[in-house]
Amino acid sequence: MGYKKPENRGLGHHLSVAPHMTASQLRRDHWTISTRCPRCHLDCWVDLSVVIRLSGPQVTLWNRWARCRRYGCPGRMVFLFTPPGEPKGVFWPMHDPPEARVKATISDDPEL
Ligand SMILES: [Zn+2]
Image (cartoon, rainbow, N blue to C red):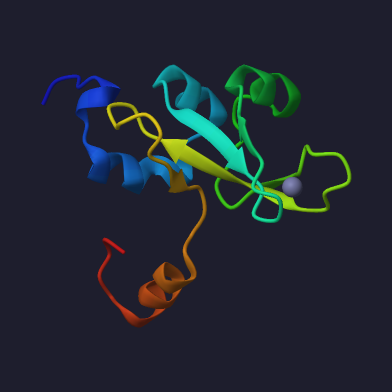
């Protein structure tokens, strides 16, 4: 087993490591991060260098939210990601779906 470039590791790999990736790892492997406000639908790119400067390189974005950037909107922005090697504009949510948590509690499968 040799080194594999991040863009060649495959979607399954990326989805399994996404919850554990720190901001500095996401930046190193060229993940695309954005935020979306479910209330006003504002989309913003996330500059990981800014995140690292403000919160440190070890911060993780999984299951986190940020206050909406639009004036007067009380919404909470959720993080979205595109792993390296995936098409631009295709995003996955950066949090556990409720159904996955249910699945994990009723199954002994260590992959879940
Ligand atoms: Zn908003």
